[in-house]
Length: 356
Image 1 (cartoon, helix red, strand yellow):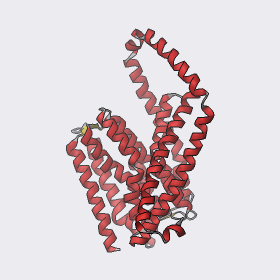
Image 2: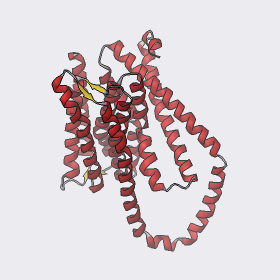
Image 3: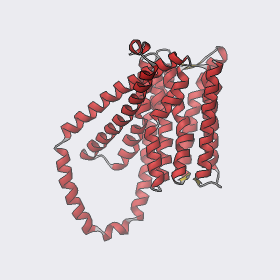
Image 4: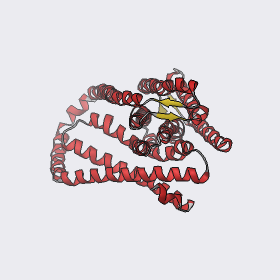
């Protein structure tokens, strides 16, 4: 792929990159959709589907792109994509979502933010001793395995949290369920017919699921290859492209989910999905990429000059909204402010390009 792209016109490289991003996003949607169908057929509770498959699904583009780059020996690109996605999600994506509808910041979102802050500390702190003793930092390979071990711990916490909310809603609407028993019986009969029809298509669903996974792997490889070729051709560090262009592209699922939820006045769903995706970007995306990189991921100067600083500032600003009792929602005003921070982050990356 790299040899082929090295001699191609820059316009063709850009077209392949955009197509790869589009195909990656759509195939991730297909994979998640089919996984949800199988889960329902096999009787997996909706609460577990929402807390695991849907949350993991929106992080799938970042995971596939980062793992692909790590396998190709470019862990720095993987780290740039993951960190850039967190920055993009917490500033630009939430900011745009707030323009379409108010996004509440309640106890649940502050809990997830606390977990995210802990994950960020776990990400950055181990790199500092290496940075002090040399020109670059390092995320040791063993840290990747630590992050992977934390994935089931986090998912267990998430499922328990969703169960509590589900039980609360169930008790609140108990009377409604009692009064609508007749309608439920009719609905159950219809659902049984639909379920029987779907069960007959299980082999097709499984085939589509594996086909989507294959397309994801190929499109991720194409995305990483074109992004690296573009970086070489323009003469800028591929970390910058990974943390801006690629990070935005792989955050498209979060963007569409956030806008849709905000429009329908379900802003809590949007913030929950984004905070969950941010946490998974560290423990799953960075974890997998680091574990697959012998010797660990080298952390270049660009991260200490721009990315880690931007990450700290954006989390601090969002923390001010989440932990401050004066704020119970992010409206257009706060959303515009978050978008402005992202624009400054982009400007800092452009400035870094000229310095390099």
